[in-house]
Image (spheres, rainbow, N blue to C red):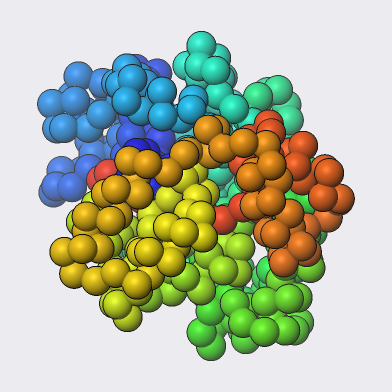
Amino acid sequence: MRFSDGVEFDLRLNRDGDLVIYHDELLPGSEPKNERCVELLGTNELRSKGIATFDELLSKRAFTETLEGGGKTACIEFKIPHPVSRIDHDTQLNSMMELLDQMLEPLDLPERAALVYSFSPRISKVAKSSGFGLPITRLMPHLRPWGVWKVKRMVGSPHFARSSVPSIIRYLRRNSMPAMGIALEFLNSWTRWINPGVPVGLHGRSLERLNRTRAGMGAYVWPAPIELEDLLLNAGISLVSDHMNPDMVSKPDGSVRWPRPASQPLDDDWRNRLASSAGAERVDLVSEAAASLPTWSELGAERRRNIVTEQGNRMHWSGSEDNWASLAEEGLPWGSPRILGHRGAGKTHSS
């Protein structure tokens, strides 16, 4: 949370009704699946295996104060139980939403500080029926909560092949979802030609089509290879990155890496100083910049307005410059690109 513009992590609801931070449906091991299913295990047993609960995370003031400070984003993925659990997905999602609302209610969160999403196609309907208080979206393509990673990808391939980014955006708008979470393959490489219609992408006319279609809608993309980081950010894409080493101050091409483009934006002076640095000097300069640059909430209204005006005009946001400036005073707009750390606890792509 401190090192980047925020964090992405996965939540599951266990047998005791506690939210735990874990990715996979099953714990590793050779025991029967019903003995390794997270939703069927108690909190003490999961803690004994090193699995943290969400309330433990919220007890860390270093986490909550940073999130409350503005400019940071927590992307929270609701994980769906493995079929062995025999748990109704709508019931599970509803319980998770009610509990998350209760747990975050004491915090003074800025607008757009948190986004909840899931691969479940039911998330929109459940959120509306439960009166869920946080913004939500659906992750694409649809991946099922069972099978090894290769099987999940294979089973999800037909949904990927029949979906296009414009159709996803239309679906999200109909369901009042402010951002999309999509696989990089929708936007990059030959895979974007699989989808129906004229492809969108990260360059030239395909990028213009993408930005005119989303018109300020947020976009969170994974994976985020370090060599594509600048390309994604310049396209207005927020990325969920596995490259969170604080000592990484240079990218593979030798250019400087700044991990907080949204929550602690560089000014022209620092951008030039960092770009012209190298070696040990760059390490020191990055540390100096981190200590001296204002955070998003510390920026003056004019500086925030200038940032979102440049982004909005370049990326074809809907609305007016005055509207964008108003949004910026309430919190970082969804269309502003961020770098989020991908926590991925318990991610083994196991069976």
